[in-house]
Image 1 (cartoon, rainbow, N blue to C red):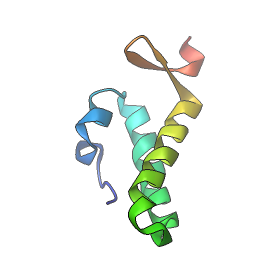
Image 2: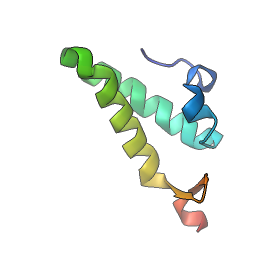
Image 3: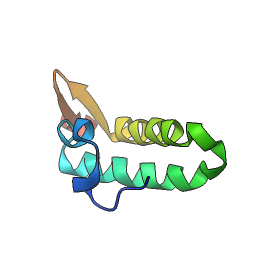
Length: 72
């Protein structure tokens, strides 16, 4: 299911990512959700993988915190 706002994201995403990374996750997830409509049961899994990959392009985990790659 697509997410309208960051507040709609799963707690595991909201509780770990900064706001900008949540925006990236949500937009990538929603786009992938539409792109993988024909995947059936694997649709949500594919959308989550795409969303996390998008976040990891601009952010990396330092300890328990996600930070911008440029901020390192």
